Image (cartoon, rainbow, N blue to C red; front, side, top):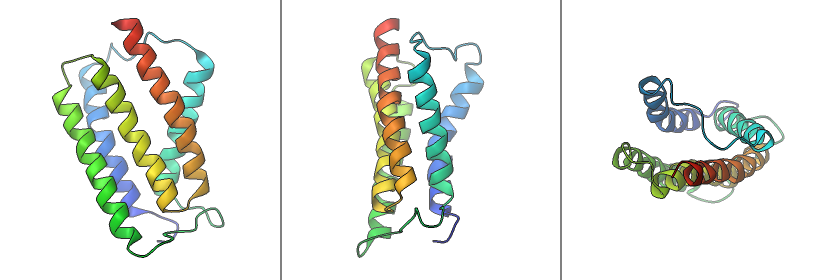
Amino acid sequence: MNWFNYYGLIIMAVIMIPNIIYAVLHKNNSAGAFNNKAVIIAEQIGRYGCFVFMIFNIPYTYFGFWFDYALIVYLSVNGALCLAYLMFWTICRNNNGKLKALSLSILPSCIFLFSGIVLAYIPLAVFAVVFAVNHILISYKNYILIA
């Protein structure tokens, strides 16, 4: 892979499709109950950092696949995680339980973390950690406050 990661773009598109559909169908229901500005800002920084680094490879921070058959592992694991994400969106679409809150925050976090590790891509791994901690916290706190 050069500076552009086509696989990362496809993965991003797959996990963004249900989010875009949800945002269109629920225009007035976008605000969560959890209102810690520092956590929300950190989560957004992590989110957009992951979006950028899943698609664009920055020279000298991206080392590429570091073991044999890493591309196959990368595509297989990310494919399974994306499939699980889409299945949880489908199963939990009309439900606001803990399963939905945690699964729909943990699965994309795993995708970003796994991609950063397998690609040996330092910025993606760092932003994935920031995103994962804050996204899971926000999802769980919103579940607690709304339930």
